[in-house]
Figure 1 (spheres, rainbow over the protein chains, first blue to last red):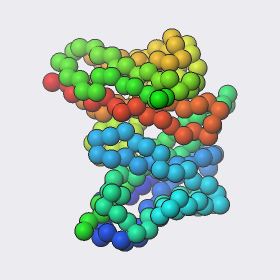
Figure 2: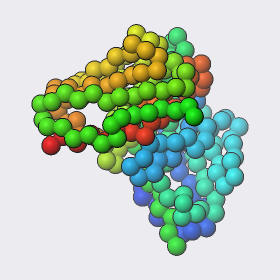
Figure 3: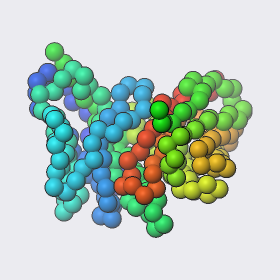
Figure 4: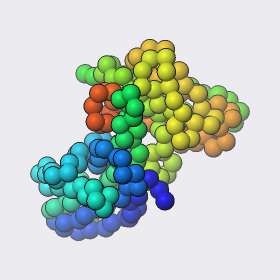
Amino acid sequence: RKEVEQDPGPFNVPEGATVAFNCTYSNSASQSFFWYRQDCRKEPKLLMSVYSSGNEDGRFTAQLNRASQYISLLIRDSKLSDSATYLCVVNIILTGGGNKLTFGTGTQLKVEL
Amino acid sequence: DGGITQSPKYLFRKEGQNVTLSCEQNLNHDAMYWYRQDPGQGLRLIYYSQIVNDFQKGDIAEGYSVSREKKESFPLTVTSAQKNPTAFYLCASTDRGNTGELFFGEGSRLTVL
């Protein structure tokens, strides 16, 4: 089983739709969680951190379910500019204070007119 | 402005040649990472370094080497022993004390002819 699993998509949705992605992780010792966005042939950029209480940033909402070991990302009122690959990232803090971050393979979103 | 600079952005090499990718950061971050990304795949960790003069193998270190002589610099050498070196290489850094948010360079795209 992969440490971090995502549905690769692509998810093709019309503009204005609401779309949700899930990501599951296998290591229960994972301590922090992130969603990154990656545009084609570019570097990933942090979209948002994911907290147990859930967090929202504009049209984006992230949730963490530790019991079931998954995180989710909800995008409301999707825009053409939301088209990208969304990477789920799971972090374990190492002995000595370093971080071990594991990336999912990403979910591709295409928003269409 | 603080950030991570990778060079070169595009690199072509012949089989059997070693090549070194540069990564410099002025964020005063302790930890630095090298990832490889292949088309349609997630990021895979090659090497990471939590402090100067120390580095650890990641999941796919074979055929690669690194050094960390200065806090700001973490060059990656792709050796001739790497069987399939054509890929997109991403350097990242993070503050060792934080929860794991990564800051990425723009990437280096290596093509072996």
